[in-house]
Amino acid sequence: MPLRRALAAGTLAAVTLTGCLGPAGSARVASADASGDGTLRIGLILDNTGRQNFLNAPQLAAAKLAVKEINAAGGHKGKPVELLPETISADTAAQAKALVAAKADVVIGPTDSSRAPAAIDVLANAKVAVISPANSASGLSNYKSGGYYFRTSAADIAQASALAKLAQDGGAKTLAVLHEKGDYGKDVASAVAGAAKQSGLDVVADAEFTPGQAQQAAATAKAANPDAVVLVSRDGAQGAIAELNNAGLAGKKLVLSDAAVSRYGSGVGTRALEGARGVLPGVFPSAAFQEDLVAVDPGLKDMVFASETYDAVILAAVAAAAAEDDAGTSIAASLVGVSGGTAPAGGQAAGQPPSESCTSYQECVDVLHAGKRPDYDGQSGRIKFDSHGDISEANYIVYTYGEDNLPTMTGTESASSSGG
Image 1: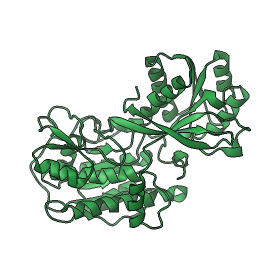
Image 2 (image 1 turned 135 degrees about the horizontal axis):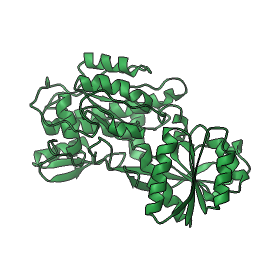
Image 3 (image 1 turned 180 degrees about the vertical axis):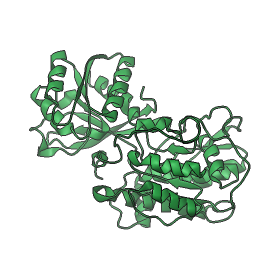
Image 4 (image 1 turned 90 degrees about the vertical axis):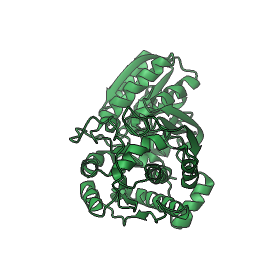
């Protein structure tokens, strides 16, 4: 499986978020009278073009698998759930408009954070629920969607406590943070500093750099003589690693943020990363889940965002079942509750019956029939949407670099969505 460093130019791109719809981003949709037409229609926004087009296949396969399982369990109100025909385009607003015209009740996507606002504006205005399996820009937590936007992927800042813990687990008592200029670097670095302090680590330096110009930042870190260095970077990661190596701060002293994790090999100094650790979001797909996906698409070679996409589709269907309505407003109002989260006063999660965990659409429907509230935990782990539509708990795969400067999966970590 290619590392998610391949997504750096798109999915994790910096984005200016100035939403123009409805109430604040943290507002949730209140329950509404049933207004659906009886057929649950699910649309996909696949916006991966160029070198990132490999991301389309796993998302499409996961959506098809989820719909297949939902329909095998009776569909929605006894009618098959429809997965609308997909298109691939970076113009997410155009895709959103086409899906509205096709009577989509919920849309899964987009992948790229920078393209999310254009899709959200169209879909939320049409009262269509939106669940992205891949958006990670922290600013999207407060985007003004009127309560129609959710994501099954974690915001960038959620990794902060995992990064601080890796440093502490390595024996560090003092920490330096180097971050690349831009929203991603600034937001994650700030969260790392906060998480480190909460863990009892002393943050002795916090230096910013632009790609290709990390020498001074590395010198600042060296002067502080830290036990460990957290590098928060994307485009400038390789150059920053080289400068840190020259300063004697690489190898096992180094902890890499998700966008900095890559298969560097001979691209950096000999054994420069030996013992360094980093994280990538998500959980490794189980063998059974991989087999099911390959059965849908025998040519599938990657599983990136498959778990998050599958869970988004299942959650949408469970929300519709809980609301006994397929309309986007009803789905948006039910999503927090069926994910096991807690909504603000006025949301449908308030005052609901006791919850019971379920891990498939069939199990969740059985919970509903038993008079309880389903708490769906899926292929991507626990979800529990918060009042922003973010998952409350983020999961990470830990990678450790060998003497060849290549990473190997060595463990897992979990963190709260707040980054603390």
